[in-house]
Image 1 (cartoon, rainbow, N blue to C red):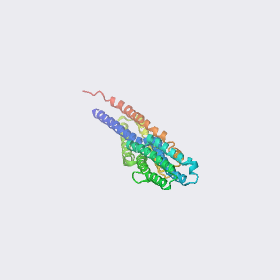
Image 2: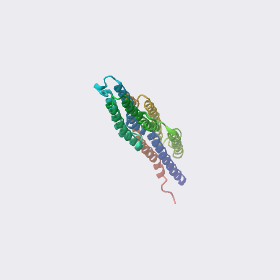
Image 3: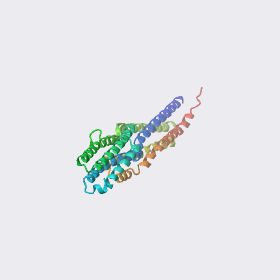
Image 4: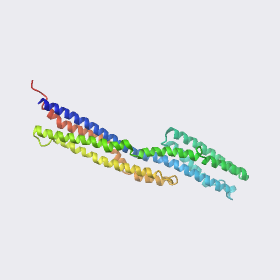
Length: 310
């Protein structure tokens, strides 16, 4: 009698410990993927698109300025509406990029510096226009402005490329599975749930032999509940696939000039991932139900041996 009680107590403890470990591993593995859906949609996408838009607008503004200064209608039209629109787009994109950047404090400070440089670039272009009658002076101002824009390492566009590289590095971390998640989903979670299922089966067999009952319904329900790990695994695979597709879209080279279209593509790609991400909240609840089923299934058998003869 005493041996039966001791065995049941140890088996209950083992089941609860393995349940806690399995549910914790599943929660961490599922959250590790699902949390990135919001990060990619709400943070990385707008941040990358704003910087890309600023880069394209500055390229276009410089080209428009050159056309305006070399055109026959410069005296009448000035630098032109097209140039000013492109420059305005660049400034607006930079202002939004400062707010949305995923590159951290260093990227934010770099974007503020770039905004100041763009203002200086605009002033120099204005000086080129003011001195349009002096071809040598006009070309000197224009050349200096272009150099400020395209200079390697510390030019405006080079600085923007550096910020963008940092943001895309964050995006790669958000959209890649990584070795830790690979280990969790392919080794840790399957091993723990297999161990838990095996323990439940062995416990059922022991109870059937010891108490002459065909099945313990509570432990049977706990065994069935373990199947829930399969749809969660499928949800994770689907979410990871969508993250990879979104990452590929945001690595295209022409996204700056088609920001709205690109944002729509990312939104369409990520459609359906948010409700899958919400399933993470059901994992602790499922774990609590699983532990309760095990406890209810074994505790009455343990209580039968509570009082031992002296």
